[in-house]
Amino acid sequence: MTFEEVVAFHGHTCPGLAMGYRMTTAVLKLLCKIRAKDEELVAIVENDACGVDAVQCLSGCTFGKGNLIFKDYGKSAYTFFCRNSKKALRVVLNENVFNQEIKEDREKWTKWLLSAPDKEVVIIT
Image 1 (cartoon, rainbow, N blue to C red):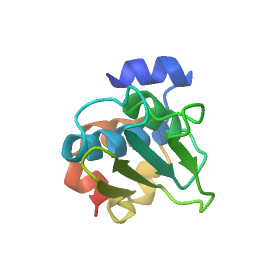
Image 2 (tube, one colour):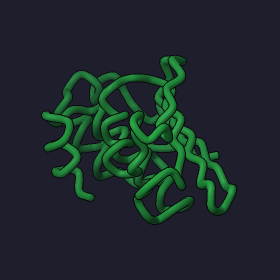
Image 3 (cartoon, one colour):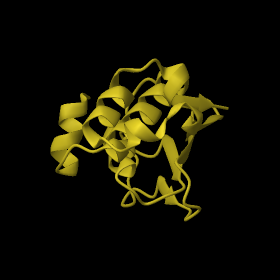
Image 4 (cartoon, one colour):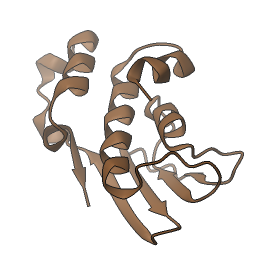
């Protein structure tokens, strides 16, 4: 799924959506390369911000299916668990690479989030 498709679901382009897009795509490349059709993948999200829409679109995890779990910790962090392989990964935003100047320009920040290498944007454990 492309970022544009996720934007269509979410309704607008923003840094938060770009964060969720990059965090989710990075984890799915390592954990489970397919979108959940049912409940084989579980996502635990630690905020209720824009990026969670990217989690839903890309992973197939939804509240309705019961495989999207919300824990209000206020962190840019998601944990994904694949029930088939019994493997889990947690992804957090690498906040150490952002300077204040880029954060002040939403368009520049979004473009950077979408184009920087995974290792600069996310930390996966």
